[in-house]
Amino acid sequence: MLYKTRGIVLHSIPYNDKYSIIYMYTESFGRVAYLVARTRGKKSNLSRALFMPLSVLEMEVDHKHNRDLHRVRETKSCFPINELSSHPVKNVLALFLSEVLFRVVKETEPDARLFDFLYQSVQLLELSDKGLANFHLVFLLRLLHYLGIFPNSESIAQNSYFDMLNGVFVPEIPMHKHYLDKPESDAFATLLRMSYENMAYYHFSRHDRTQIIQRILEYYRLHLPEFPEIKSLAVMHTLFD
Image 1 (cartoon, rainbow, N blue to C red):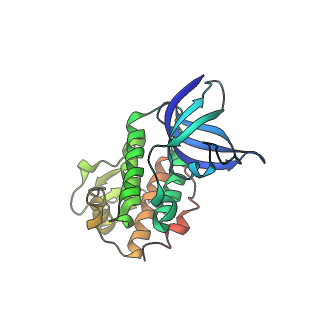
Image 2 (cartoon, rainbow, N blue to C red):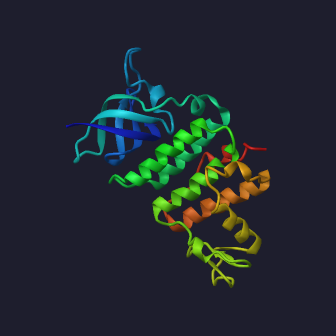
Image 3 (cartoon, helix red, strand yellow):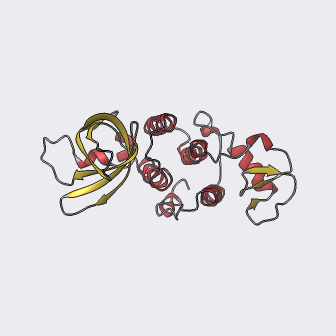
């Protein structure tokens, strides 16, 4: 049966000589895998250029609920992503964030709040010209809300330790190794107040930013046991000197 839905590209892998599998997070069906031809004529509306990481597409799809692979019949961009494809920093950010999403967004049920967050985040990344060095930090921390593992910000207090295992700020060192010391905890509490609107006002050294992203990914790994190493992280570390 044919349906219309919007979708965000997460990942693409070759299927055979003629087709690729495009993993997308869709508004109507949650995470879906689509079989898309790798080569098409010039007049085709399924150009491979449409399926770059974090592309936001309006699609007509052939969706059968008893199948693992589905077909895209027609598609077009919801809005241009010229910056994501050509701007060197935004291009790497899109690659990194789409890889994270591919690893953490597994649900095959739709979530309107999550889709709206992703849609608006991609729009902001395309349009933003300030605070890009912090965009991925805001994105990863805001995403925790929709994964159900956002830290308990009500527990923030001076001279506390952030217990990463339990997602809470505590007055004493936890009885395990997964915690932040007091300076790190203070910095993390500050990060939790960062948003897309104020991210341009936060400044970190390259060393501090590298430590921050490592700690955030460690938090992901503690709460999402199947969360792997992110391959594009090494490229991220070369940015924002």
